[in-house]
Image (cartoon, rainbow, N blue to C red; front, side, top):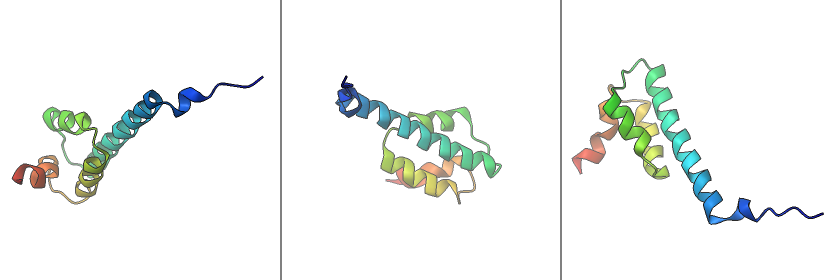
Length: 80
């Protein structure tokens, strides 16, 4: 008996995987900040978790390693 695996190749399943990757990226950023002892206010946490752009999350993760405050993750974005 053949098993129908078409769902796993569908557009919907790819969207679900993308959402999971974005959520994981946001969690990684928060983990880095918290591990470094940096306070993450609710508004910053919300802004990080609302992002679904994988490239932007990647840049933010790289910044999270060195920024002195959570707000500074967005400095380059807010400047232009």
